Image (tube, rainbow, N blue to C red):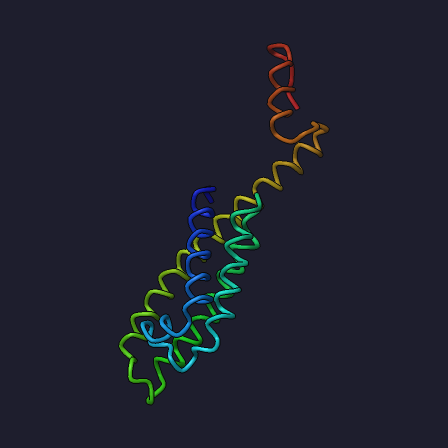
Length: 154
């Protein structure tokens, strides 16, 4: 996962969170989520916390997964609004559901990439520690560079 992807998703979380927290009535009307207007400030707080987490830490993996879990909750709310026969804005709810599903796919992809990169970095660090090379792969490269030509490497 690139740092810019985590940064961009963090900014998206802040924007969505601010909108849901500060304008729940407008957002619920436009998105077709009117029956769930009272949930939107809570959704906003969740998004704001994910955004702050993504923008303030090096390990973005837990915060990316928090977005995926939140997306699942959002999809449940969207589906409820979409399937509600009393909702006059079901078309808006369908469009909102499609948008949330697309964002969920992006969040899931980036979460998997980040988890894979973290696992690879952990494996590299463990290999270096087992080989007795301090400070991870950078020191491992330094140790290899210092060995005379033709001598066996670690």
